[in-house]
Length: 420
Image (cartoon, rainbow, N blue to C red; front, side, top):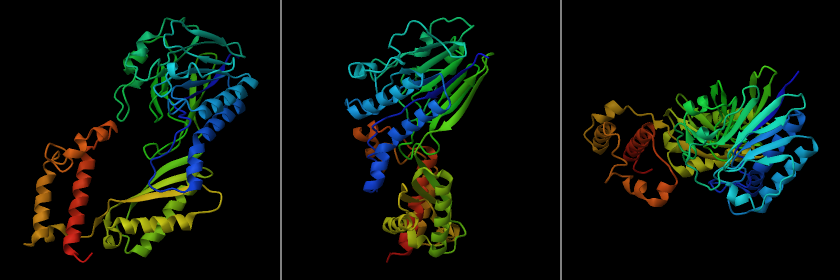
């Protein structure tokens, strides 16, 4: 039977520096710096174990363009392992590793094909089973690529399995620079059976006909990248039925625990619940390491005990100490308090004091959704700052509402408890 089996992966980001954590220690920092390399090792092991015909790498193999040698050397060694097992590699370069930045450095073994920045024809490859596959991809020559590359796919006979690699932005993708922008309609029109996509770090199955998939990155790198990370194992039968399945490769999992404290009577009960919920998350991701953030919500009966950041930091420090075991990669990075104190706001609003005035003003601001960020607003100078703008951070309407809500309850609490 003529079949094909391959791995589709992207955004390895080898060499990520991991500089964004508020708190860490030497052991965790070392594990994080090694995590992208270990995730690649897992990917290679999967390719060998599953005896795939080839591996697709869809851009951003490296994190930086500073000609750091270790990521390149580690990748070359991995390619040689695949070569020894008769596994091919097809790759394109993305915005973090444009072709112009690595062409002078890369000396890959003969099983590796790097698609150019001007690919005009399909590459034909015959599987061990006898199935013929046609592959096409286009690398970024420079970091910023704004052409619609999906419209540049050349014609190809329909009797071949047609696989296209792109590092691109399909539709609107919040938080990502729109490199190589295209639409789903462009993917549908092209002579392609399987679109292997990269650039967006969250995996997504966009289309069934043709199959179009973002594999996501192989290792989470921040709290923007929580949950499982990995690649797709794709199996194709002789009738060209395509069956993709997700395979995890990450070695450290990033997670946020959402904890509603409504009904929790006191700080002691809270600590017990916090420990159990965190332990559940550790068990869920085991044997991987865990970088975790805890987000509190709900109506809090013990708000006075946790309204200051110092108190939250002490709780996190004790939780890390209680959960730590030798040899594990575990970090409770911090705790975000979005809970509100247990106050009767309607009754409190009827009083004739300053707190009542604050509540009435807060109600007025609830009707004015953009007052925080508009010119002259409390956050206007921050959002006008050029360095802040480069971070690409925006606040959604519900996030703005959350800021107002938190500020309101904290201010009322402080006014009612001036000694605190």
